[in-house]
Figure (tube, rainbow, N blue to C red):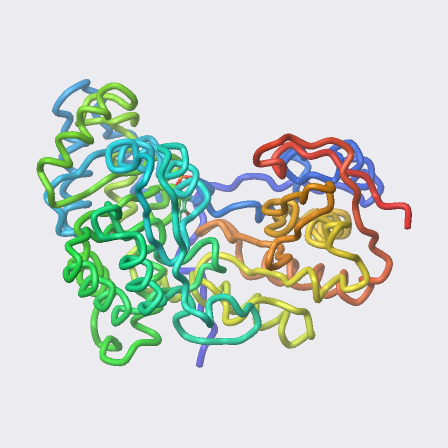
Amino acid sequence: MRTIIEPFKIKSVEPIFFTSKEERVKILEEAFYNPFLIHSNKVLIDLLTDSGTSAMSSDQWAGIMRGDESYAGSPSFFRFEAAVKNITGMPLVIPTHQGRASEKILFSILGGKGKYFISNTLFDTTRANIEFSGAEGVDCLCKEGKLPTVPAPFKGNMDLELLEKTIQEKGAENIPLVIITVTNNSGGGQPVSMANIKAVRKICTTYNIPLFIDACRFAENSYFIKLREDGYQNTSVENIAKELFSYADGCTMSAKKDAFANIGGFLAMNDPALAQQCRNLLVITEGFPTYGGLAGRDLEAIAIGLVEVLDENYLQYRIRSIEYLTNKLIDAGVPVMQPAGGHAVYLDAKGFLDHIPVDQYPGQALVGALYLEGGIRGVEIGSLMFGKYDDNGKLIPAQMELVRLAIPRRVYTQSHIDYVAEVIIEVYQNRKQFKGLTIVEEAPLLRHFTVKMKPSTN
Ligand SMILES: *Cc1c(COP(=O)(O)O)cnc(C)c1O
């Protein structure tokens, strides 16, 4: 087979920023070993997130120029609405400024004390919005989804037995929605199969509970279905996506992911009464229903992005580029999550820096090492992000110590990715020289964003 090439050529370029290792030693120290405190013009390859970091196409930029900024009834809104309706089949489309704004509106209406929302895995902003309403989120991820190095085709699937048991335990009347996250971001970007979505639909119908999709990476998930699920090899990804949405009553979306936009999101649904309530809140928090927190130009960029993301040459390149980096690392013996997910490579920091105890944050230490050696920025997803303290102030570690390297869409070329692999492998070969970290200062909530750390002395 021939090399799968980037399915685009480059019209406009942005600089990336080279620094010397001596400079990076100082920058890292001044940022207290926290990647969120490093200025992005001191980063060479930025893999902090795939959210809002996509390169837009020349068509999208042309759409930005065409954007109509009328307060009400802009043609840009109607193009956006048509694009969303076409893919989701849902007649009621509500624009928002990003995914969590959709969540805030939805869960303010459906949430509240005594309510439960069940998911494969709720993303952190989704869970936060559910909990903020007073309700609780419950994850029912399949067993294989919790084993990082054991490969399986659909590790984002719901555990159907556990779902049904949870519904019976909590009472169907207390469960306003079941939500499937595609792909499962917090679980390594792993896909959900169509069979699993259909089975969840059936259970939801039995108990009369609506099903929503957290659709941020619907195109990547649909492409995995085409590659891996029997019966879909000859179906277009667009039709796979349409089938996927056909089992749902509604969806939330962040257009900063699979719509190639730098900002934006939406809610779409079938139920007119619920849509009316959402629009009532939208007007207070986001804006009039034909722009909802966005400029007309953003609506144009999203409408065009939603068509481009279903291009199968793009998706082949996208999924392959994550797999390419993952395989290079596996071949070099680097411990990584398997199989490759849709948007990021996850390093297993516990295996990588096995001389650093969990209370010295091996994930954060690895993030620092990658920056120091190669100017690469990733993010810890481990005990710094999810760890808690017991009554004696001792760390209760997270289940896994991961470092996520999220790949922005259409931004980096194969030689950038080769460089990333080289740096990771070099760090792995010299891993014993890297030390753990100790917390100097931390916030009570979401501490990873602002934490200050220093190298451990032992
Ligand atoms: C990013 C994301 C969100 C939230 O979207 P924002 O646009 O960042 O507010 C919700 N769910 C998933 C799965 C996401 O990846």
